[in-house]
Amino acid sequence: MTHEHIVEFELSETGSVRVLSFYPPGGTTENGLSYVYKIDGDEFYDIPGMLHGNRYRNYTQKPVVYRWKGITTADQPSRDEQDAE
Image (tube, rainbow, N blue to C red; front, side, top):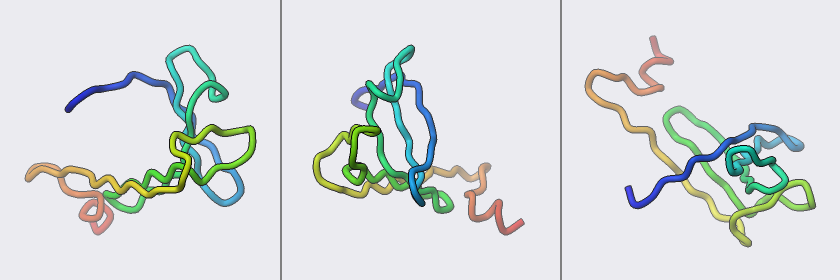
């Protein structure tokens, strides 16, 4: 790990997409940053740059998709394995 952040966050929806907004502790969504997100099994998609208007602030100017894969260990089944049970 190169660095870490401590933030508060809020989950919301705008239209048909889910939005995660994060901001400094004690702050508000208005002084934070936001992105569209999706969870699919063990994968988390972080999609900044898609939100427009005054309600949300993007942390990138152009849309980009980040895919994060959950880490599982031998004694911890993946989310897909849990769903199959």
